[in-house]
Structure formats: C-alpha cells, structure tokens
Image (tube, rainbow, N blue to C red):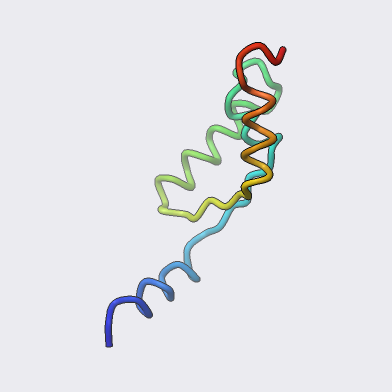
Length: 71
C-alpha cells in the first residue's frame, strides 16, 4: 500500500479553517479591529500544520479589493 491513504487520513484529522474575503482583508490591514486576533489564529494554524481552506471566488474578491488604486 502506498503513502496516499496515510496522507489522506492525516489530513482528515488536522484542524481546519476556512478563510473568507473579510478574513484575508483583516489579515492584511493592521488598522482593522480584529487584525491581531485574526493574525494569532492564522499563525497558530500554520504552526499546528492545520489546513486552511478558501475558494477561488474568495481569492478573486480579496485580490480585487486589495489591488493598488482600488481605495
């Protein structure tokens, strides 16, 4: 048996976090009210090898809101 089933089982047990558009914007903006809390949670997930999920629609929306000249 190959490694794939083991990797899949490990992923099922990993903590999971979905980040929507506002989450990405909050992580990016230090003036945002919840920036510090969002950053702590994000870094904690990275340190714990958690799985962070989002969608291409969320990334597209966040990109369009963050790109230079948008403000």
